Length: 47
Image (cartoon, rainbow, N blue to C red; front, side, top):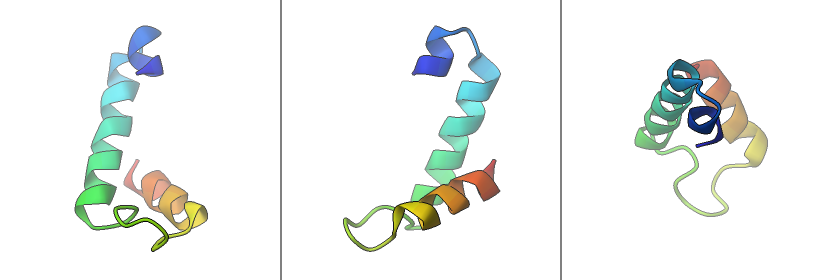
């Protein structure tokens, strides 16, 4: 939402697509299952 607010529509779309891809694969969807660094690594790889 911050990127949209700043007018960075392409970056906002890329981040949202990465989040959707990562959560669709099951990463970060169950509390306590994945550590923050694993979720971050998956998001960065998706970008």
